[in-house]
Length: 272
Image (cartoon, rainbow, N blue to C red):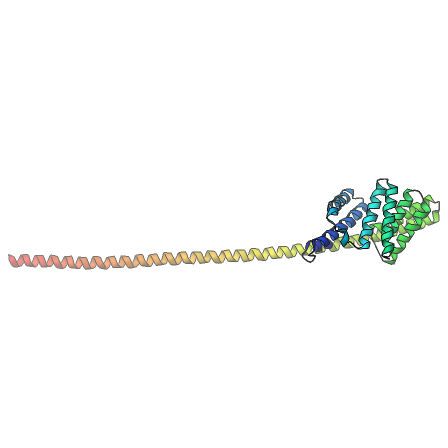
């Protein structure tokens, strides 16, 4: 979750670098879902990885990333029963690692172990898988891959008839399975807490935005009402003034009419 969020952020500015990180993130997610027997999700990320592959700039990959790519391809060949193609690709990856004097990683041992197990060379498979487990333990790597290899080693000892070792690694497998389940629960809880925290922050932002919007609308409504009131009051005042003026005009006119009428009566009396 955090890796995908980082990739989609502005912190990674080069598109080629983003493609590389996405490719290997999809690779890891596909493997993780595969070990959890969630094949639909696993295929989803494998397809995403395949779509992204043509966009990769191989010159930008370091030897370890090239190694992951080759061993991932080898495992696909093994799953499709193409053991010769798988072995050829793994030897290419091994040569690149030796040329660059890179350390041996657990996934390389696992891939060779898978090849020898498929070709029924159980002793050779056991040798590589035990080395893979040793590397994972030394570096405290806890993944579904770790648990899976203890299960695989248990099966190989059974194939070789070494039941004491089979029982020993069966117990280790159960232990690793429980440890991994606890770790996954912790990681899931952490991820959920991060998501919930972000959702609460977004809700808080949304709530604040709504409050600001309501306040702005309320202020606008008050302003409109005030302007309407001022205009209405002004019209009433103007109407009152006009009415008063008309009243005064009527009184003046009435006074003039009365004066004129009295003058006419006076003239009439005088003439008579």
